[in-house]
Every structure is written in structure tokens, then in C-alpha cells.
Amino acid sequence: MLPEARDNRVNYDLNMPSPPKPKRRGPLEFYEWIALMLFLILFGVAIATHVQLEPGNSPSIREDTDTLTYIDGVAAFFFLLLVVFDTHAPRRYSMYSDELLTQWKDDKLRFMRMYS
Image (cartoon, rainbow, N blue to C red; front, side, top):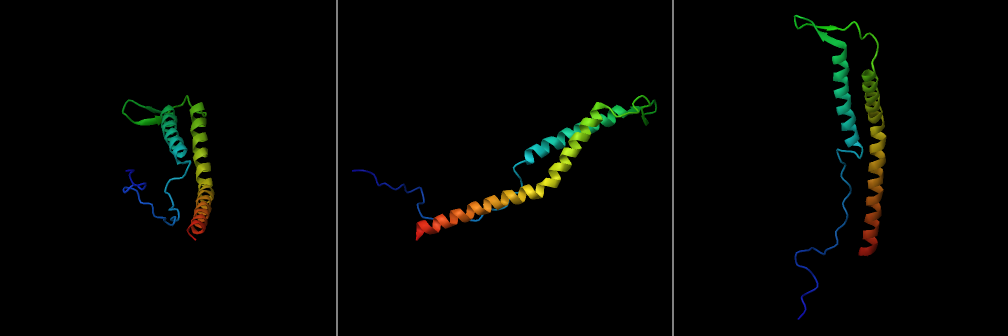
């Protein structure tokens, strides 16, 4: 005799799709963390290149590095990149959540058509 077609471990009832829950993390947050880590490292290195310790362990600014170095420019670039990420985050999040909401509405309509 053949086993029954339905698996008792699986629930085959139709369920209404639930609305999307807002995520705390956006799709580009990984890159924001990488940019933040690189900025903090490069900012620390940039400060260390302009400061020297004197005999009494008192820090002072070096006289031979009176101009901006390459590392300062790279740190400034990552700082500006973080500012751009922060200014575009609300718009990016609203586009992402709008896309999820329209997808949920389409799923809900499909479910209602299938159920009726």
C-alpha cells in the first residue's frame, strides 16, 4: 500500500503573508562598517605621523610635517565617503522599504485570488 501523500510534519494550510518588518540593517551597511574601520585606522596613523614624543613623554607636533601627507588625504576621502553614506541612508532605506511593501501587497493580492 502506498504511503499517504501528505507529510504530517509539514503544515499545508494557506497563510496570509505578513507585512515586512523593518530591518535595522540596510543592504550597504557592510560597506559602511568597512569604510568606518579604514577611516579610524588611517586617522590614527595620520595623527601619529604628525605627533612626536619628547624626552619627558610629552607629545608635540613635528616641525618637519607641516604639510598634509598622502595618508591625510586618504583619511579625508574615507571621512567624506562616510558623510555620503549617512546623507543617502534615509533615501536608500525608504526605497528599500517601499520595494518590500509593494512586494508584500502583491503577495497578499495573489493569496486572496488563490484563496477565493
